[in-house]
Image 1 (tube, rainbow, N blue to C red):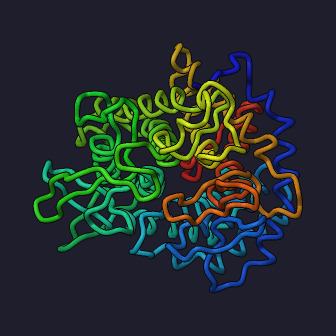
Image 2: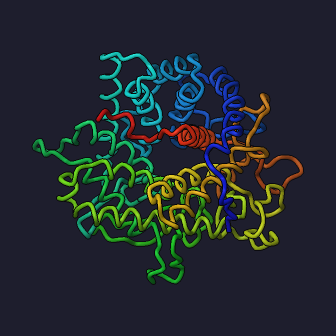
Image 3: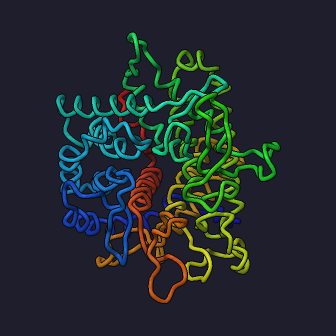
Length: 458
């Protein structure tokens, strides 16, 4: 269980954050120097160098989004130019990519951050450039929402790249794309010019994910532990009925892959923040504010509670809470995560994502005992993941956050000489979300905020 530092504040983390940005800058430049346009996107490191894995190109937005965040945090205009140029040159195909569930990852991280900087007046206003970003974001939300499977109860979900039967826990974070597109006044146009609400699809997807991917200890099956998350939920597309939980990157359908858990934590927490900005009239046709916020909050609380209870004391989880050899690590959850062990790897990328979810939920519940508990657990986790031995300060290693895991079942992660498990490597999503976490905490320390929907003028 996480042992939270109850006195820790965002201001206390500013020295670690400054060190992160100093380490981050040369790594971004090194990755850009090595990247060849048209080749597969950098995904994870092998012996300190970023390599590709052509599963889907779901990490490209993190590559260029990292440069944009670097500018936001430090004011170094060279990184703005890099992120802006690469987004314009190389990201267009992601806007209309009909084959993936990753629009929120790729396009809100790039076009969304650039538009946010213009709205915040951190870059010079330019009407044509602003229109370009807005059009990209309108389109990406609609394309993502079109990847839709209806289910028997009248709801539905955005299906994963596995096909129309497959709902991934990850996709809750890609709802960013639908939210921004809706906030910009866009809709998905269907047959006979039917106007399909992106907000409606967002709420339906969130409800389906809550109903079938998140567990609440209510007796759904023999492994229904409150807060547990199934990576994949499988549906019969002939009749729309749920068939079973599954897992692509976790150990099993009945254990919890911790990065999938982290996506749920961060996704619901940030959607709660966004929903709070909407007028009641937008939510009334979908069941009303009270029921929608209760749904999102139930999932956020349960997943965050499970993370706190099933993570080592320093906030860094092992890659799956039911990993088969976890029991061989003595007192695994009663001491800091053991990076060097013979049995199961840790996953720092899950911690980087989860920390933001915990802090956001804590701030959403500001003034309550639970809110303080989530906030302090998030800050404690952030302190660990943003510092050595997880922070990579060596210019010889292109990764920023070490000890990330990609796909343990497929054996894709590098096992260094002398080790029995993967360790010492980084992932593009882990590095990006560590930067996003650092920027968020830096802004909180300065009395400001950072949200994905800050790109929408109000």
